Length: 79
Image (cartoon, rainbow, N blue to C red; front, side, top):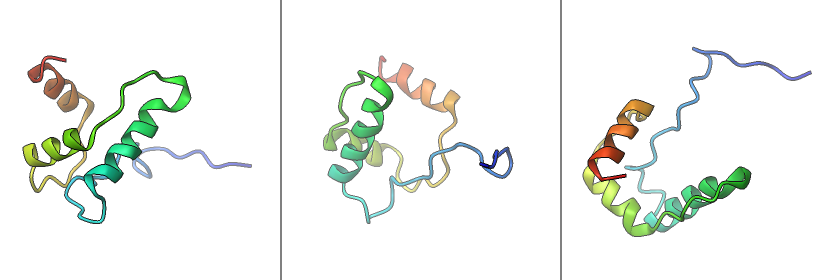
């Protein structure tokens, strides 16, 4: 039988990888594109240039973004 996980045991937040030099812009772009295509989603690919621009826009950030913060970023960028 499986285990049900609940907050605060897990939060469902994606860990911060943006400032981790172990992952190149290309590797993160490929991972994000894979996730965006999963479960029959038709989302566009993420480019290495987009990853690089996001890293420059949020230098040193270590905490996960909230959904509200992500929606605010999209509005600022015209999405």
